[in-house]
Length: 300
Image 1 (spheres, helix red, strand yellow):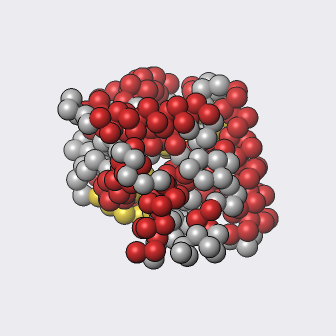
Image 2 (cartoon, helix red, strand yellow):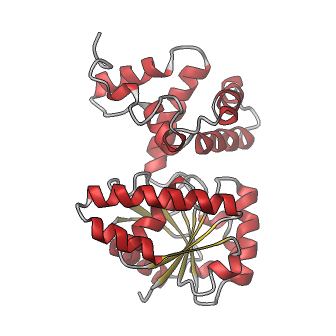
């Protein structure tokens, strides 16, 4: 593996984390997003991550040095002109990803390897649009990447074997635990376990069975888990949760009323009101001091 220059396409919550994790481990990182507002927001996120990394790793100088390795662009061709690897972290919407890969395949250098950070979609769904299916693979990270350092590497039937090996090496080089998934699986390992759990919690809420705090409290007391489904959803981001619910509903012609109700609830009561989760300071809980961290939360 001889990667030096990495482009991260999409600078949202996880995109920014991937970018900082990569720069923190010595790579040059070009960040691409579709407009200046997104870039400005990304720069603010990276500034906050500098503090997070400096504190978590007890190395403020290294975190400061990472900030010198970023470049930013709203021009895709400019952002990928030197890319050895492009990591895509754009919205979990098939049409958006398809359009992106068609454009990326035309402007990226021949050397560039493409990796999708998709949470639920398969690389084979987009391989033909990349123009280089043999150099296309999935590389999935978990939120709060610095601490929850899993990197799921999943090829598709057309991925070249050496690309898979290179991505496993790259993941290790940026401080991740590389996890090779031997065949395509929607949701990979992490989300094959997590998404049904989060969906179950959301459906209890959408069907008026219980309030989010009650659901979280039940799970946390009964299992000893540090968070319930709604605390996790705030970390994942309400927009991502909404996109997944919409995708599930559109894929299922017999979508239940609860799925439709949940999608509408997430949009009107959270997204439309700017309550996007931890990133905006409010989702199901208010931050930086959510109720589930209070000592009294798990008591009678």
